[in-house]
Amino acid sequence: MDLEIESLLFKQVNKPKNYLMTKIINLWENRYRINIYTEKEENNLIKRKIYCSYFCHYSPGILTIIPDNEKIRTDRKIT
Image (cartoon, rainbow, N blue to C red; front, side):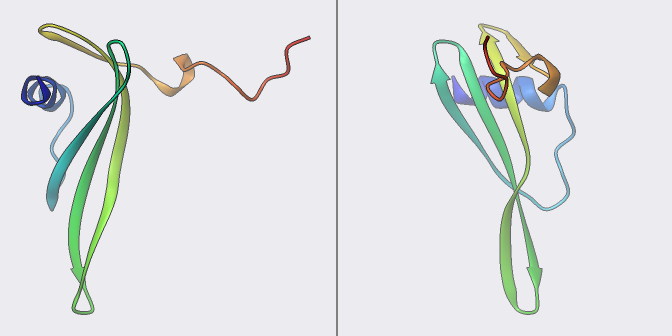
């Protein structure tokens, strides 16, 4: 399933230069955190970092990237 999710993601976003790997983490039910990592050499050191991260909803054949403004807010007080 991870290969299908990765394929669906890269149909919606471009693979970055210096792409290293994609890590897909199932958070709950059909919600996923997808991190895209890059690798770059600087001063004889290899630096790896998360290039971008997406919160997504997956159902077979469909991957929906959920924009930041639609995430559940946890920093608000409930009165």
